[in-house]
Length: 394
Image 1 (tube, rainbow, N blue to C red):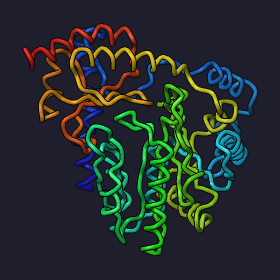
Image 2 (cartoon, rainbow, N blue to C red; image 1 turned 180 degrees about the horizontal axis):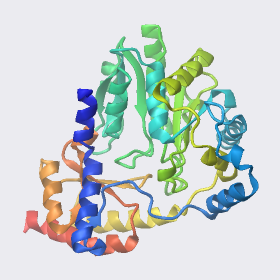
Image 3 (tube, one colour; image 1 turned 90 degrees about the vertical axis):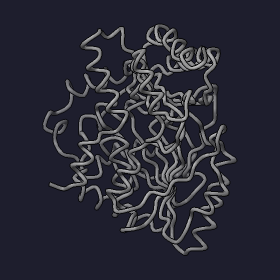
């Protein structure tokens, strides 16, 4: 066996381990007695447009076409509809010839990294970050370099970023709204980031790609502005998924967008196509490819998450917990009540609270709380959070 692949299977992500632990506990003590805040699984149903469009496709489309292969990068008309939608919404100038349909954002990231990395080249991420970035980068032959965000604000530490970029730097991954903090990169910060990368490109005489991982793009509260990166940086790659916006995580549908202004963009796109081929990621699920055009611009009821955010943030803050205020996504990043976040997470299990320790996100001393759950569960969990807090301070 491949030793590394065996290790990845034997040591699942902490998020998945907690999720599976929660399923087993529910079998023993009942669903209502376990407070599972582990996984980012949307709790509200997909919008009616999804169901109606699927029914229409199944009833009116030739089954041979509906369930057959499309072109390897995805159906051209679907890619065209995505480009036109993005151009209308963000004022950009993207083209279908630079879009590659994928089985979700994970496949999009895996393909993109495989397309651009040569062995030993580096990918910079900002901690805290989604743990699978390390797996995807390693699989592509690259090395992950971590730049910690500033404590408290969780903004980019630009001084340390400049020190981290070197000749081997091939890409920087950003993820906003962020998993796990819910923070959003504002326009000024993005402009500063892009200026640094542009300067470093000139210094080292090669492209440094800015990869934006965007499964939470629409999950934004309080009218917070989220800049679209192709309008700010030429050598940019967008990795998108419909999983969170349309509540379709299990259907695995998304895309890669290469900026139409990218240097040698045609070569980059061919590399993406080659990476997709080498990984077996060609022809994303056809039925859900054909669903996309009718659902562009629609979302599930995102107001549910805002209600949950406000309820959980205010209640936990009143108890005494220290929390990063989230502008988007559906996570709270809460400071653990002891230095060892794993120990704190284990103690929370005593109250059937499943909280993800932050170590795997590259940042110690915090836990992630996923609030894409039923609001009633949050209300029932609050007394448990109070008991957990009191155990430390009373």
